[in-house]
Amino acid sequence: MPASRPNLLYVLSDQHAPTLTGCLGDPVVETPNLDRLAEQGVVFSNVYCPSPLCVPSRAAMLTGRHPHENGVWTNDHVLDSGQPTLAHALGAGGYRPVLVGRMHAVGPDQLHGYAERLVGDHGPNHVGSPRPVDHGVLTGTAGPARVSLEKSGPGQSAYQVHDEDVAAATVDYLNRLGVRRRAGLLDEPFCLSVGFMLPHQPFVARREDYDRYAGRAPPPRHREPSPHPHHRRWRRECGVEEVPDAWVARARTAYYGLVHRLDALIGQVLAALRENGLDENTLVLYTSDHGEQIGEHGLWWKQSFYEDSVKVPTILAWPGVLPPGARCDRVVSSLDLNATMLDALGAPPLPGSDGRSLLPLLTDPAAPWDDVAFSEYCTDEGDYQRMVRRGDWKLGYYHDQPRQLFDLRADPHELNDRADDPTCRAVLEALTREVLDGWDVERIARAMAAKRADGAILRDWASHVDPPDQHRWRLVPQMNVLEDP
Image 1 (tube, helix red, strand yellow):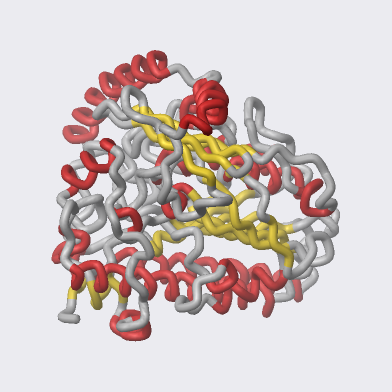
Image 2 (cartoon, helix red, strand yellow):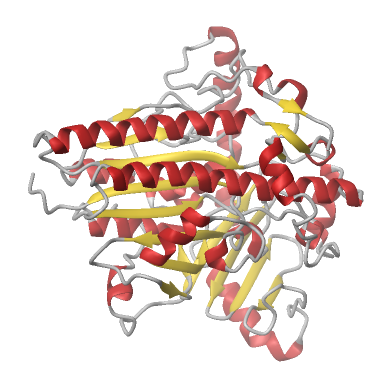
């Protein structure tokens, strides 16, 4: 394999709010390692995830296909192993893709094209496993529920312990590559994906990180609850119609601490890359699967099309190829990041993918680019929702409920819904036609009903057979600790 072929270091976190880095403008959070990476490459301000939920977003990012195309809408849906992924395409292009850490795919296939996986996910590989996750004192805090705000503050989450293991395994992998390089035995480029859990809730950070932001983490900019009926129902079902100020402050302080700790772990990985002389011809991509509301619009977690939930922080660096210290404000989909990695490494594009390589745009700002991105959110409770961002406008389509329309140039914090504004009627109808083009609610409802029927059998099978987990990190309840603030 020619040594001139680039390496790939793809770092994917979980639930990182889109502006919560220093390089994207947050004045409080300290992210020196991500900021340094941004100085070496391009930081993106308008990257949209394919779904504001973990498994469907990650499945879409893997396959380059939207949820309605790959059939993964919820965290219980199994991705068909016959669908080629980013890892399959990289392998077809002559690389040996390796994964360390989080993938968050359910089902028997825990590789989806990766040749090797060094650290697994913390949860069972099979829905219905009789060995579920036990978060001990933090039980319930990892999901969208009031308890995740009530039990917030200083302590320790098992997710951070998991990520420390991921960072250590990644550093060890890079150190071993360095040994081979110095011995003259490294004759092919490496292809490494790293999956972190942070800063996903529980909103619990180690005392050192919590205290760093105590009294400094700001309150939500716009805490006034979203008036949309879907969001009103969501707040009611999750028990967050009213949240005490002290809980808000604790949860946000811990979240800032978790972002800071994530940055420190990424710093360990980047230092190992640099110290082993592996950074000069390596494409480094950092992004997240979705954002985090952290109280904005009266909402928490993700599961919405507001910017804090549906956008992700993204940095792309490639020495000698991409301009250092650059910023890209074009509208981008996470699927485009998939296509960009494949293009950069000379791997075949994924069939049926809507992803577009960013390389022509990043090397020539005058290159044509269509400023559009989609996201969708469908649940077994009957929510069928899709979003389109086109240019300055964003439409949220809620089946059988009112639409939302925002002019993000004039209203970046989405405080003025223009859906009922007569002067915006043409924009509303044009974006509605676009968001529904090729997206059939009735077909999706039938497909999800079929998946529920299949899932019932698979869940009962797993509960009785207890199939072994191929890749599962050992989480024990004692890893979770909650201290007094």
